[in-house]
Each structure stands twice: as C-alpha cells, then as structure tokens.
Amino acid sequence: MGGTELSLNEELDLIYHQLRNELNHDYVKTILPEPIIDRDKLMIYYLLFRQQESTLNAGAHAKSVMVAEIGLNTHETMTIEKCSDIKATKKRQLTVLSGDFYSALYYYSLARQSNMEVVKWVAQAIQTFNIHKCAFFYSKTRLNWSETLEAVMKIESALVEKIARQLGQAPIIPYLNAFFLIKRLVIERKAHGNCERTSYFSQAVLGSVETLTVKLDQEIKNKAAHLIHALDRQENHSEWLMQIIDYLRDQLSRMAEGVGEGTY
Image 1 (cartoon, rainbow, N blue to C red):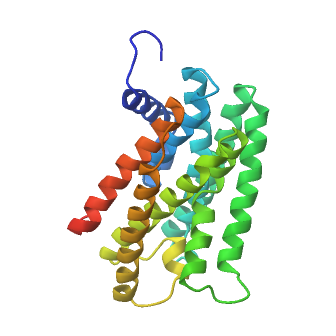
Image 2 (image 1 turned 90 degrees about the horizontal axis):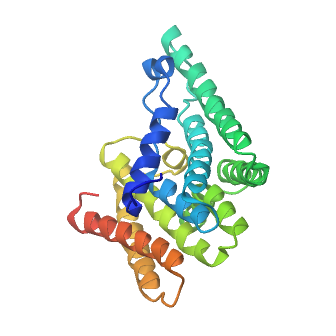
C-alpha cells in the first residue's frame, strides 16, 4: 500500500480483495459458497490496528483477525440434522474442515508476522466467544427477549471487543457492541423476510415469523436511533477515533433508511 496515497475506502477495498484472493481455494468453493467477509468488521479492525501500526501491518493484522471471524462463522453454518445422503455428509464434513482451515490460516498468517501478542488476544477472544455461545444455547432458564439480545451482542462482538480493549480503546467498545448487534438484527430481519431460519439466532429464538419480524423491526429502529444519537454527541476526539465514529454513523444511517423503507 505504498506509492500514491489512497483514501480510506480505497485502502479497505485493497485489503478486502487481498483477503478474498487469500481465501480462494478451488476445491472448497466447489462444495461451499464463497466465505462472507464482513466489510464493517474488516474496516473496524483496520482502523483499530492503524492507530498503532503502519498501514501495511494494520492491513495484515486486520486480514488475519478477519480470517478468525470467518472460521467461527463457517462452523456456525453447519447443520445438525441427520444427513440423508453422501453429498450432504460430505458437505457437513467439509464445512467443519473449512472452519478449521480458516482458523489455522489465521494462526499461520499472524505467526508469519511474528506477532504472538495478537495471537494470544484472539485465542482468548475465541474462548470468550465459545463461552457466550454455550451460555446462549444451554442456559438453565429460557432467556427472555432482552436477555437474548444481550447474549447475541456478546457473541457478535467477542473478537472486536477484545482487540479494541487490548489496543487501549475501551471507550469505543459500547458503540461497537451496539453497532454489531444492530447489524446482526438486520441480517436476521432479512432472513426472516425470506423465510430462512438457519442462523444460531433464529434456531434459538422461538415464536412465529410474523411476531419475530415485528420485534426485529422495532429493535432495529430503536437501537439504531439511540446509537446515532449517542454518536452525534461525540466530539473533541482524535482524528483516528472520529474516523471510527463517522464510519459507524454512516453505516447506521443506511440501515435506518432501510428500516424506514422496509428494504434493509
């Protein structure tokens, strides 16, 4: 990323396409869809690391942590129903192996950068992620709606919260947690609009599609408005921190427009 100075979005595009190329494996993509790269998380990781690292190193660290996220998300897509044929069994096995592959790729990429500190942070974050996921699925009592949202927020932000905290950016964590919870709710709302119930959230939350759709619409609207208001009150921060705040605000505004228009 040397030479001509790039805009922030251009830097992210470059990192995004580099990551796509690194994850491109011919055999895996014949069985499974291309892994989804969360551009919002990639941007946040990049901005978090860029405050302390060179542009090149920040991009490398952001890609590595994003691979860990993809590994966790890949395991989430694995079905638990009894496989009916050899093809379904093969797909499930490859899903497990793909998640493990992405996790191994993450450790390998960070080890090549000789950054064992970040390896330790993400290993701890993955442990926290698994604890939150188990608590979500195996709670001794059924979670109410508010408890469900709190649990989902902890799951969605386990890695990004750990990185932000370790990099000395604890004040931004509540905004990141709220943002990625809203994003998960938007994803769930889209899925329910298409009558899809395959995510960990939809499998755990009981109730009719119509009732859940109404709840999701209301939560997205209220939480987005609350977070935009909180971000609008932020001022007198460093240029770097304002970049994160401005980015979150812009993305939330787009989500809010989708809520108002019913398009998401």
